[in-house]
Image (cartoon, helix red, strand yellow):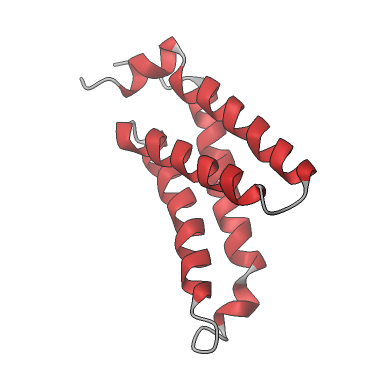
Length: 112
């Protein structure tokens, strides 16, 4: 059995934390879900980050692709925000790719 690379652990925990912090940050908006239904989308995106992180820790290959898609989505929406936010999300995406797709990570996610 391949031991989980530290990079996978760190990135997975980062996404779990980002999802949890995002839910806490938007918690007040959840009370107004009937008025503002797009809050459901915000919650779903945060839950996807948590699910991706948890399942990446559990050696599920699709989870690393979910995490990559999640950060790519944030890079795309960052085009509509400040350039600093775009640069930060792009940097996180590069680190995510490096952490989840280097040879040891590939071996970890390879089916048994």
